[in-house]
Length: 304
Image (cartoon, rainbow, N blue to C red; front, side):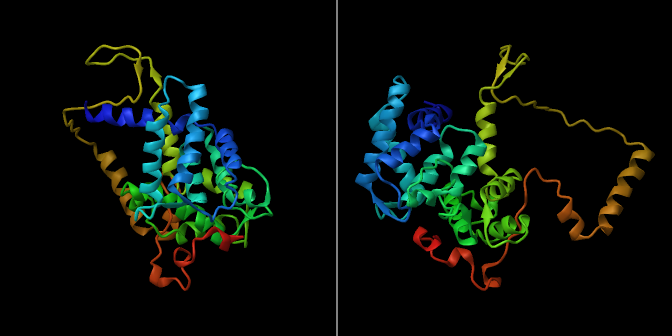
């Protein structure tokens, strides 16, 4: 079996992308996973996952192998949120991990992440915002730090944290609250608006959705190699020859002018006119912070 086939087989076996947000929240409610600071031991995690995959098997009997799915998902959760293998994972971590990869619209997932703490006061929400928001439906800097810190464990486990601004979530927290006018708390709509800017620390989630959508995209074009038409999935063009063109004097002057303008532009200009496809988050050294958010306790009960 090739490497690509192994990856495809594991994705098929894990099948978290088939899990509806509402179904996930229903299982959380059935197992009374309302206190997000609670530590779940492996037997409790297995019980919850078994219920989730039992629900999925009823909808997708040909795709779901319950023992295999539970084993793979358990191992993945422990790799991401329990790298020291203590055998315990916080409720909030399991929720965010499963909701991030579940089936649903991207905006619904953003809302989900906002309220994880609403479940502590008896309400049920399947969005990510609700997993950390307080009982009044607003989120303070510490709660946002908890959300970002927990979510960042996913790319961190893959060794890609540096590409998304590093493991220090303080710059992202500052970015969000600066966007809404440096208030003491943010509301759901403000959080979603910031997330639509695709901040660097969270940009991997919308990219993941785009990649998943591209895998089934059909292109009315013929492959130059196998002549298959239409082409399904990613479509790329490769050029084997390096073609150089002689530039005109007018083009040389134009390019020189652009370079000259950029030389005299300040850092403030480039901050206001970024050419990136996401909202960059300026890194801040932890030694420069009086009380870094990442050094504060990440226990959810401290964020109520």
